[in-house]
Length: 359
Image (cartoon, rainbow, N blue to C red; front, side, top):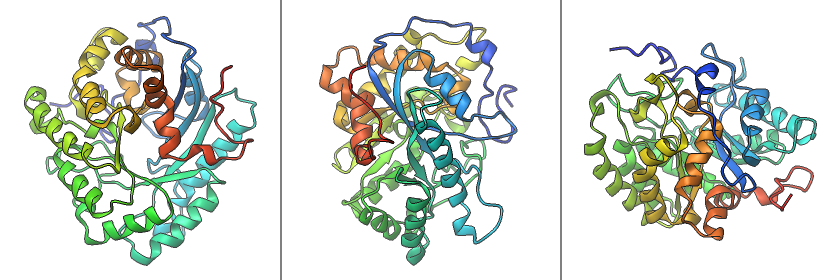
């Protein structure tokens, strides 16, 4: 049965600003510096999310010092070799980052890091493409993500463009990952929980590569997993603990209000508050932090994808509730430090850098 609040092509929950405004909360710990390590920008038929939209969210109360853009197939070049078309996305985001760095749009350094797309199965082409993206990003290029989230059920999709099955298992993928590691760049992997054994195999095959597992490892709650969160959870937990045993793997903690998660907050008369979100997310968040430790976890917004179910202020309030028992150093790691270290954002020149000093 189709969900009228889910876009039929993108399979993302439609963002309704008027609905989100129904739930307003005071900002918790408003002085806690945050680096949001995962968001997108796009101009799509299901709704634009560009710099003004991002800054409206990041400026809604929490102390967002900087952000990292993650590839989403936007603004690809219209012509030229296929494997170079994704350079258009990096060029587009570098322009947005330059606008933000001018200071004319406020103190948040939007897109201080750029995670782009280079097909790691391209063999010898990988290295020159990485060089081209690095040059196009103006010093901000900090990683790669390929389209890897896949499930055999046609009901399970979260990509704007459905990838073919098997990129993680492709014989050339690990070779491309080794080339990426030689650049000192991490690999973001968006995979469903059913694919996590492939992520384990990749992390073992390329121990010199930092693998960033997106969205708590993608526990599914739609298609054949509808209504089965309680059954999925122990399987997901076991696989995440297996990943956590590998020192080159870190995890982004968030993405739990995507459509594929199976939660139904978007169908309710009012959007959820942070207490309800924290209660719902707690088993996943605590599992990740206990398994990986705060130094290998980073909280993320995954906006605007997660915006279909909750607002930006409420999302970060929920994450702050979940970190309430953490020490000061642990909070720093979760909200900014891990992202800064993994993506080497401290290497940016002072004119472009994220300022994490006290205001």
